Image (tube, rainbow, N blue to C red; front, side, top):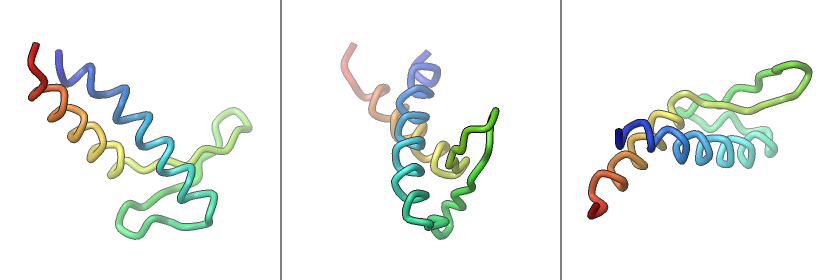
Length: 66
């Protein structure tokens, strides 16, 4: 269940970081930020960043006392 909870903060972290780097016309180096169009709206996204952000969120949620 902790992994499912970590998907939302991982996606938000990815969206914010990719939007900031993508607005500066950077590809993020090894992050590989790509510009996608979904229903006419531009979106910057990186699956590498999403994996790292979700893993970090999962770790922080898992070590939090319940």
